[in-house]
Amino acid sequence: MIIFPRLSRFGKTAGHDRPAYRDYQRNIGNYYLEHYVKPYTKEKSVLDIGCAEGGLLETFFQAGYQCTGLEYSEHRINYAKENSPDGIRFISGNIEDISLNEKYDVILMLDVIEHIEDKLSALLNLKKALKPDGILVVSFPPFKSAFGGHQQVMSSFFRYIPFLHLLPKKIYRWLLEHIEKKNVESHFRNYQTGITIKQFEKLLR
Image 1: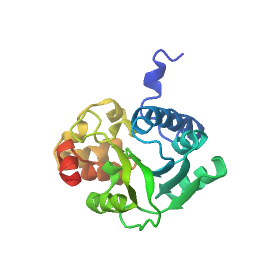
Image 2: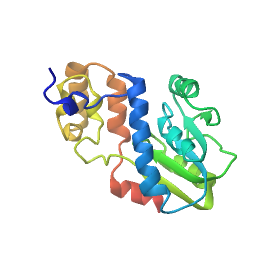
Image 3: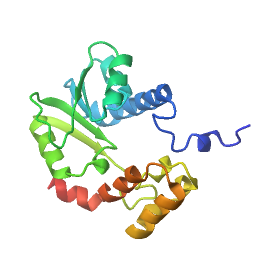
């Protein structure tokens, strides 16, 4: 018996249950569509950066948008292609170094920028791909927030500890290597590439 079902799902990723993750993406897509896109533009071409399993784009596609997804992970984009409606276009690549030939009315980059090393290059590429009157929607967990290091996806009890990632680098690395043990390099990379709100505002300027 699970007493706290919401807690049991805490930190679950696509690797745990891909169909469930696509459902989560669709819910996120509905939220951003209604609150961040429809109020600001009536135009219909959308690019999703880091589209992962493609669930978010499915929501926009069903609402009549021309949808394109960019994804770095080969196995995730293959899954998206296999499970998405015909008509959604997927591009394999890294926003840091890819040259996008088309321009879009809406560009979404949700929970992606905190994983990117060369953030300035990524934003400059997005600027080139955005129509003059288009909108760019970016979301991320600020590095100094409770789970800004994405520790909620860890496999050990660390997943429940807020602000763990604000420990000094050497201590954090030691904890990953000796207690967490799984996906050490991936978790440490999140530690190194996280971004604060002030840093993001500076990049935008």
